[in-house]
Image 1 (tube, rainbow, N blue to C red):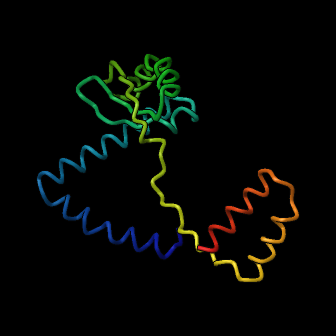
Image 2: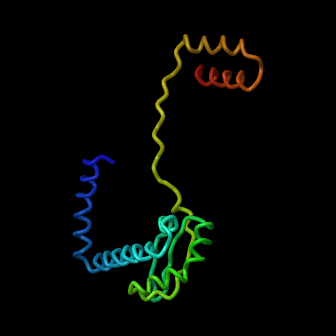
Image 3: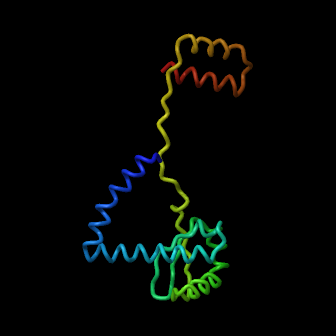
Length: 155
């Protein structure tokens, strides 16, 4: 992301944050977000870096923390560490007795769109060259691929 677009997106978020902080519901939401981010940071300090990068604190309900991971392998690894992590959180001042691990497969996905391919059509000379090549190669996968290419570009 370029510096200009980063500044632009950052400045457009300020009015939303101001609006949120001036409503009771928004203030509560911001407080919850800050609490979850702080818990995320504290939990990350209790985990190996490779595991910490794949864990998101989703909820704190009393003395129980619910965390999300992208798949079963991450869940299995994290479940081995929950007792130790809960102890670390308690030492950091968090009243967490248990950590519940949930799988959220959407965490592993990237939501960026693939760029649209801009293909230029083959010219007459190129099509003629491929047609000649198709007649020179022996039957098989290469000849089939050339045939598909010619059919596609002649339509």
